[in-house]
Amino acid sequence: MFLLVPLTLDYLDQERYGLWLTLSSIISWFGLFDIGLGNGFRNKFAEAIAVKNDLLAKTYVSTTFVLLSIIIGSVLAIFITINPFLNWGRILNTDAESRRTLSILAMVIFSFFALRFVFKLTTSIFLADQKSMLVDLVGVLGNLLSLILIFTLMQLGRHSLLYLGLALAGSPVLVLIIVYFIVFNGKYKKYKPSFSFVDFKQSKGLVGLGFLFFIPQMCSMLILSSSNIVITQIFSPAEVAIYNIAYKYFTLALVFYHIILHPFWSAFTEAYVKQDFVWIKNAIRKLVLIWAVSCIGVMLMVLLSGFAYRIWVGDRVNIPLSLTIGLAIYVCIHGWCYIFNSFATGVSKLVLHLSSWLIIGLFFIPLAILLTSRIGLVGMPIALIISMVPQSIISPLQYKKIISGTAAGIWNR
Image 1 (cartoon, rainbow, N blue to C red):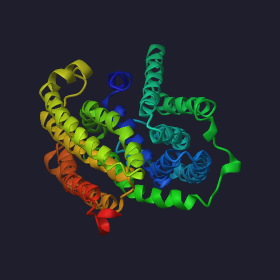
Image 2: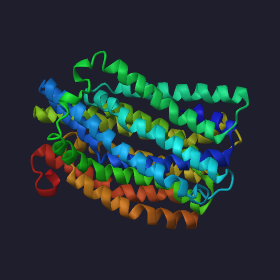
Image 3: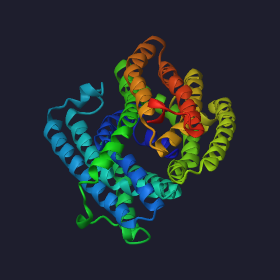
Image 4: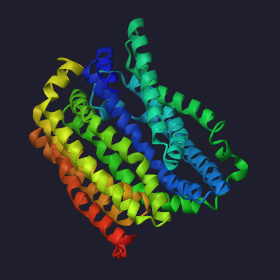
């Protein structure tokens, strides 16, 4: 992923790289149409295999695959219909590419996204079975294939935003499709999707639980994706590149959090089903300690940022120190919230989680527009920090109430 940034900047330029990032962000909003099904499925599947009910687990897999296919198939048909009428040049605030090129690019990205929408459910199975290493491996292979394709295009002299879209959007999908056939003809063969195991009666439970994940998922995606839109409209796609490179620098810390915490979500589900509260307390205590150490690492990243940026992207992009510091603070708050949110989602106590994310989602965009237009790019991480503060207080309080048996009302829903 880190190698892709300077390679992509060399392949195109700062503005077109920003265009790619912004357009990808807009397309990713359509991921909300799964209405939380992927996460709802993850919890249901984890519960089924925890009690060794393989037939029920296979029913969940089959039903969810069909539901996701129906949803994204309908959305894709709508997008194909309206895409020719969308002025992507105006939406992206650019004249660097023709309207026709941007329209084709949007169609290409969305088509690959539709396939990814369905086949990424394979990774939810890995997470439910506490095999998060396999999820990370899939991501690595997708990025590696993208890297090889872009390097090959550079050697051939084929510099095009459209080719970039094909390489970056198509590579992860190709890997996911290959993984799908390997997984369901190997260790997870007994859970292989089958039309005879589709049971739409189970969809109520999947969608019901999934909807509780939907609001936090929607708000989280809205916050991260709308950042690029706000920056594009207030400044230009070139500034999107600056912001995203700084954000990707701290992805090192975010990846660290995710690697550590990914398996804990489903582990919390299993422990809660078995009423193993001692294990849960010990796990949270260790995760908080890891978080504290990682925050020291994040501060070190700030101190070394000037050197790191020079090594990484050279003089292609100039990144303000204030933006780096703001994102560092946000990443630390994000890591703290992620610990307790993983517990809440693992045990399906999502109503309070949902409510706090809904408040964040409502206030973030106006706050981001206000701060960014007044004080520049640093306004974006400040808006992120302010938005996350309430959740950083509420989430650990809910955990303490649930684990001590004193949670009542919204705290226990």
